[in-house]
Image 1 (cartoon, rainbow, N blue to C red):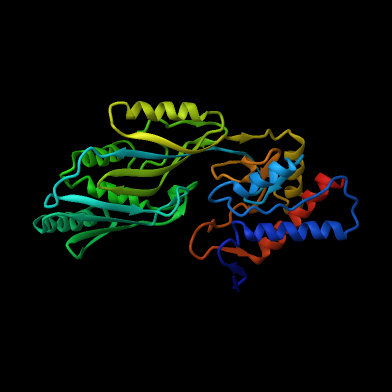
Image 2: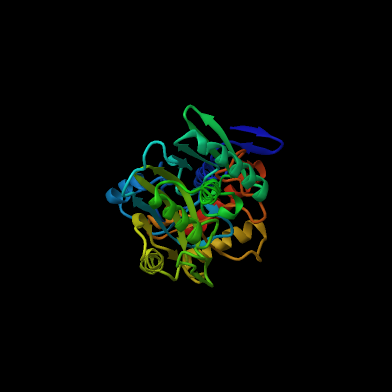
Length: 369
């Protein structure tokens, strides 16, 4: 981490090492103020919130769930609901492998995590080199037509195709450009010898493509509390034997994962593609009239003077989904630029101290008044 022009730069400064440290100092400040605590307080640190839930489950299995609390992993004034999350693979085994001289897609990889918009995707095309010039020309025309960054280069006896997009959090895919979708869109213009592969690519482009809300995938749900469903294709792994795409969906708080799966399966009915579910986190929602929500919201308003910004139902998933009686509370303030999960992630020094004061008020209100 380093400080420059009033900002702290480094991975996690805003999401959410910075807010965690602000919470720690808020706890210290309330304790040193001489306030009398009516409850025991703990700062619980989990280490795999982005990739799993082993650490927090280890804790709750041994010590149970708290009576109330917050995780500083989102936005102010308060996140009183989180959309459900479903992670699955869209997978298909191919029934045959073409001959070596045929035009083949031997490998396609892209992305690093299901909950991040992939910035890069790479395909390796093999077969008789007589096919390569046509593919190179198609790539050049595609780049000129769409404006997307897609390039080709010779790689031994193969042809590599690389697509570049823009990374973003999977909960905000509109802030990024999906390199996997660029690649699949381009590959849809090529006729490979493997018809199963061609069908898989065609299905993707017809039902997923660049859509962000499941518009053509049977799951375009929305509600007043949380808005529309959010879909992100995060990781691609395609070989000559198997195709698999890892997809992360955030669904509205009034819907269920069963409704989600039913809608998608209706689109898959006449295909050989299947859904392999990896994770389901059910949505959470707490009314503004609840005691904890009102206390946290008041702590924010008293410190900032902001009485206009409404509570939020967010698409991001936090430990609030894994721990009872927990809500996401800060630490990004309204109007701030969101650099979470991005290059040059940063947090202003002013915001760091302000959130610490908000957290101190919240801790006092919940546990000392």
